[in-house]
Amino acid sequence: MKRISCIALCIMLLPLLISAQTTVFKGAKIIPISSSPIESGVLIIEDGSIAAVGAEGEVDIPENATVRDVSGKVIMPGLVDSHSHIGEGSGGDRSSALHPDVRIMDTIDPRSDSFKKALAGGITTVNVMPGSGHLMSGQTVYLKLRDANSVEDMLFVDDPDKDIAGGLKMANGTNSIGDAPFPGTRGKSAALVRELFIKAQEYKRKLEQADGDEAKMPARDIGMETLVEVLNGERTVHNHTHRHDDILTAIRLSKEFGYRLVLHHVSEAWKVAEEIAEADVPASIIVLDSPGGKAEAVDIKYKNGAVLDDAGVTVGYHTDDGITDSRIFLRSGAFGVRAGMNRKAALRALTIANAKMLDVDDKVGTLEQGKHADFILLSGDPLSVYTHVLETWVEGNKRFDRSNPADKDFATGGYDVFRGNVHTHEN
Image 1: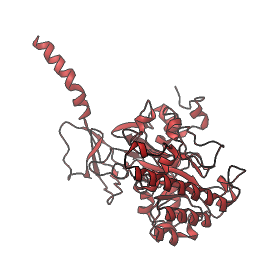
Image 2: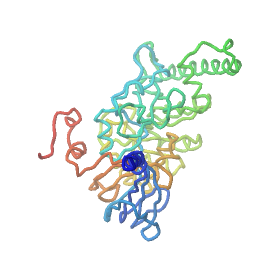
Image 3: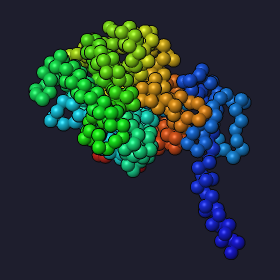
Image 4: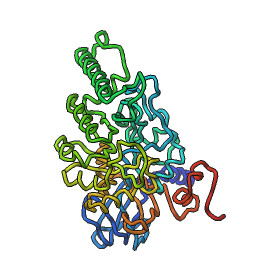
């Protein structure tokens, strides 16, 4: 009986013993982002979080830890992509130009191989957006790239019916112009947005006047509820825009209705950097390394990041995958440095700056004690074209390993790999 009791006790304690497992990475150059690089560092992971980070000899390594010597490698935080379309989701349809009620979360495939593409590029957190063909195409969702059976397993919040799981995607400029019921001009685009927010202000007033009295509450409107969250500063607007005049229109509308705004793409931001800085609006920008695309992006410059950073704007890079392949996201920061951007700012633009835009900077974006153990192991300098992402870790779990032939397929293969049609490794 005593033996059975001991076995039962061990079985009961096993999950606790596993969850408390400590893993140590030592010898690598560590780039915490929040502080200066550590040439020969120690990163201690415990129960999915960062227990300690510092220089060798200055950090105590627990006796029971699994220790990995990764000398000659580089460790930095998992990358945060503030604008992507991975996950095979969708937004509003052509019945209206404004769909604040639509949730891309309801359409995400958590088993999509597009997430493996992102992990192969070192991305651990992503803002998945509906498209930009509408003035409002729906609600975005902030995802952690965990191994998941459902989209709920990937969220930063516990209950998406009670907690806000993402932002609101808006757009102006060429993409959202079209035949009725879509606006035919830029002026009409702004007017339609303004009209809907005025309705949302009235809906908000009715809610406040009802003060919880069900008999006085207005009829429930899930689109209006979303816009009230925007008006309350609880949900951020992520606004697709390119031309300098469209950028200023997006800022003008945010000021008029008092909502939080992140500018996206902003190809001509270098023309109005001071105005963006004065408005205290962050900018999530993209790098285009080949000609073509839409006419309104013709004046995009590699110097966009440098100009915005010099002006005092919080600036981050994004992939807009598949415009930029998630696997080469690090290259965006390298292009910024090539055009004069400060190296530290470029690395922040791939990590903590984007985390701030998604309101998750208390959890991810830097390597600091208490934050989630999201990090990447690199073969060399993060801004070198010769560097490979060797491993990607999410909350202390290895999600990508280039030494695994199946994982390497997703890092090096063509798009047929993501359709399940080809495997490039030798058997």
